[in-house]
Image 1 (cartoon, rainbow, N blue to C red):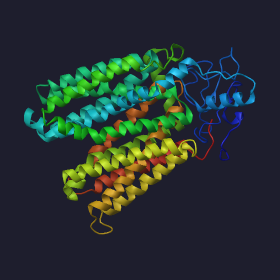
Image 2 (tube, rainbow, N blue to C red; image 1 turned 120 degrees about the horizontal axis):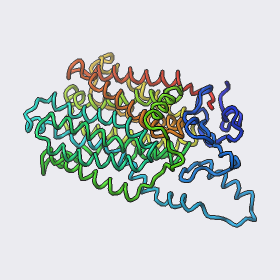
Image 3 (spheres, helix red, strand yellow; image 1 turned 180 degrees about the vertical axis):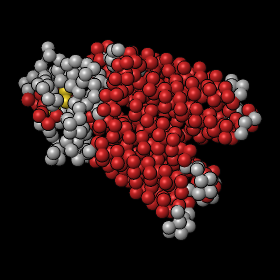
Image 4 (tube, rainbow, N blue to C red; image 1 turned 30 degrees about the horizontal axis):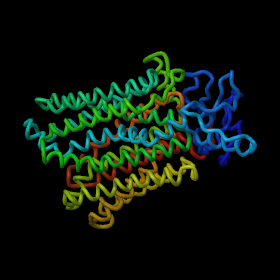
Length: 499
């Protein structure tokens, strides 16, 4: 099949036998795969499953407007064409619901960004208190580390529960239940009498907090489509990217006035504030007519259908293995920079901050400049090439091919790797969610769970050879990024047009 141009014909995008599907010329060329079909068509009658197409119910003409609440560049473009073609017609204001939604855009963006940043706050704000936890509970460091693993496991599994629930009951109810659970679990962590109890409550904290991550992505899918969704994910990365920068510093400052239990009380207070703001100002974005029916069996069928979509699986694996390389950096960088290359804690914090800024800056370049001008798959491929090159350079440096490498070259290539993630992660998530317009909660759950699970597997491997060599970190990163590239090329097949 030949490479797609900037616009596609209806026959190239409409599902076979669907006369109501119309092309979305604003969608990124090459975002779906040849014989594959977008998942979700079987779940809701009268709607198009193919990405980049829009259908009207049988009782409406094909030119009907998109569902209320979803902001698409296609809708705005067609409205402009109609206005230009009818000069004599008096101008009309946009739909009230859409106007209100746009006015509340900044607040909704901050709420969704805070929900996605909650895991980083739960993990990173607690890091400076780890030695204190071991001393207070008379527990070795290796056991204290299990409190991090427990939270990570809860975040992974919780998304599998909250995502399908939000497809069935709407976004607000499961989200508010999860946030209330997060508040209670955080307070329980502060009162834990022993390490076993703390580990158990950390699992519950992760399970409840997972609702914020997965449902925030599903809300974005409800409200936005196509390139607008990719831009919005880049904006969320700006907010979420600040969390790993500020959380350790904030945790260290909190420990000046209280102990590790106070950190969990602060997290509980943050949860209360976010729950109140969410209940007051985050609207329901999934209408009753678009909700899934059938409970758990239907959710399992939906997930099975998502995995059957080759392109969705490709984006899921590409994003997850890239996330594993990111986790390898987060887990190994304190030992690599301080123990091997002699950086002080202050220098390490500065390097960590610069790398996080690179990640956020790349996300903003992606959303503000590249999206709409360059196909998303092309930007994703560039990000994979950028991160892969950095991982090769790190492997050569850490194995001593160029002699003993100092801190500066290693930190430089780590910064390149982190910056490249800003081009990979938002586009992999956007492209994956575009494959499931009518099962956004389940798709978001699978994307998030796969990232955390694969990241959790990769994280301990960086220390397999001890604390005095950085080679395992570089090997894990290179292996993960090669797997991401193979999944992207082999399953997504970005050079082919998709329906």
